[in-house]
Length: 523
Ligand code: FAD
Image (tube, rainbow, N blue to C red; front, side, top):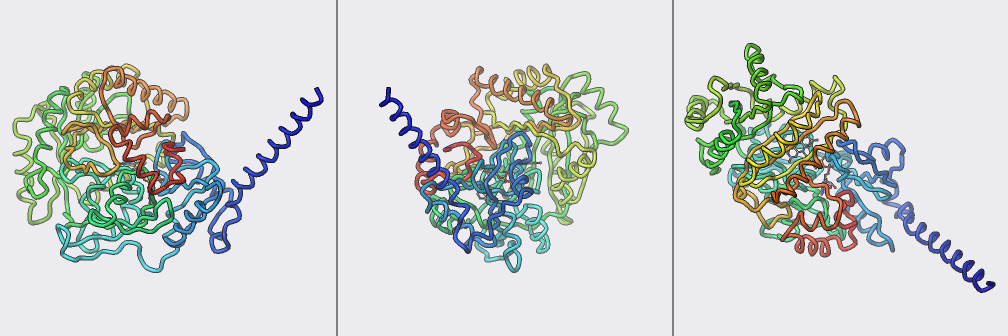
């Protein structure tokens, strides 16, 4: 009995000691070297901002927010973490426009990339021409820069990047860590296929310049690498002469097979230098349960479009765009007519509009400016983005769009569902990003806005779960884009044949597994 008591006392003391040592270790980064100390913020407002993201569904409180003034600061932060017996995790944060906590860390440090803007003298966006890239010019841009700022800076030189996302208030480092896609990807590839060179601070704190020819392993690792291998501090983006205008055409379909057949025809013209090809192809669903967004259409046509949606439950909109300037203006209309000749959209449901190039690129922001004052933008966002192999997209339409979305009938005052095809040969398999195995796959994006709050968010989450389960049961080998997985096994399945490489790269570039814990891949 006495021995039992002694043993129990010893165990208690040991437990206390272990707790004290672990706490002391995990809090030791609160005492960083003098030159770094002033860059850690523990201001409650700063911490609170860094605890959530655009999705509003995941909350994690970091111990501190690091505010770098230079790339050297980032290097020093990572080296400092690695020097501790228990390194702390570091969540690189662009704009936190993620929706599942990818840019968050619990008890670690959030690296606020935006702060780099305050440390430098001069711009972190520099345009130069050396004649080496296809059009001879490029922009060197900080990883923390917003694409809208890159656009504005390059337009001053009459130039523009080639590859875009639909929304430009995202950081260069944030989209390159995923892929950066939109309707231009079928021809020019995702943004990760349009990078000439990168500056990266690895998870070991080493600063590296990399490209396809120099330190190529880290170059390919970080592109689509979900922030796991290093912090992108600069990217060299190729530029081309900026068009001045765009012509946008909408064709409305009730027949999904005709809609996808015509979409696939358009993306079959995908050579970069084929001037008669489309510049952009997307597609979206018109559904009664998501407030019908009909601003593109003439007022007189809105009632008949609404009736069409009510009649069919879903209308599929093919959206095709061609850019032009004053030299190509006359030709563009004819090019579009040639492309859509023989298409099977609903007769008389063809609409077109010309707009300034920048206005077209800024269309999502324009929508943001419209719905934000109505309280419909800053709400929970239970999004789901998946790539679906072409061979299963008709089944996906029946099972998910018609079987789940229409049946569940979850209504909201805002939201958008996209569906459009891409060519896999525009993606580079050496990069970390993953796609389905087929030559053509569809990007399906459920941009759900839970405009009435968390109860509605829950309903959309159920819809997302049903969608994933449907694909699993039907054996449709989708890949999640902007993935948010829960278990180790799910990540292994997500990366498939690339998992071993992904794991090896982690061991090489971030052996202590400190970077981007919010992705929950290695933590
Ligand atoms: P964050 O959310 O801050 O970070 C995302 C991930 O990248 C995190 O893991 C983070 O640690 C890591 N990371 C961030 N910066 C760096 C860096 N410099 N170096 C290394 N890792 C880093 N995506 C598309 O592809 N196409 C679209 O059309 C599109 N439209 C969108 C529209 C809206 C309204 C929103 C909110 C998002 C959209 N997205 C789109 C998704 C968007 O690309 C991703 O959420 C992207 O990660 C957001 O960039 P961010 O700068 O906010 O990154």
